Length: 249
Image (cartoon, rainbow, N blue to C red; front, side, top):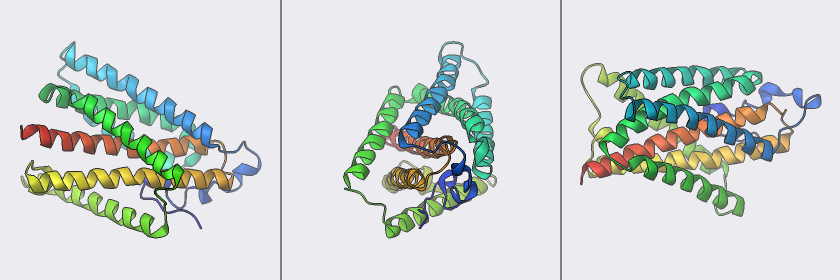
């Protein structure tokens, strides 16, 4: 049975879309996927640091343009790789560079308001990644069908909540418990962080399943892209939660 995942880059149709390639191409490996993920993280860091320098050293006023351009461009790049997996070796690095612009801009704004928050968010993001990877490999957390269904449903609910908040924003309205720094708002952000983190477990399971299925080599880039999407989401949510906590001090 194909593994279920809430990550749109690693959905149940991912490997069925490329069936037949593995007969003539090199096969996907776990180490290869790890290497590709490292490359994407490095590229994202490069563009993020460039925006960071623009903000803190040159005080460039167009940081918001980098944020919008990176977010929109990254979304388009991700959609291309999702619907046409063979483009992933080219599109995934482009996604990482564009997403780095977005992350660099958001991180700069947050760091200027709450000094030290970015280092905390980065540490918590990668700490969560390695802790869940250990828990998954050691069998402490198992990606059962019920587990996958629950995380997928919760992720879908969070997506709908953010869409509702986005639409209400056009009418000058907001969802207080989503952006507020009260007890309920912090609790909601904490819940979203947990769900984002649990998506990593689904990604680990799906990648492992792809290796077992003998997916083609280029799917390493597609799998790395999926992990990047989850890590970016997790980092942003941790940053959001920390900003709520810091604003109460």
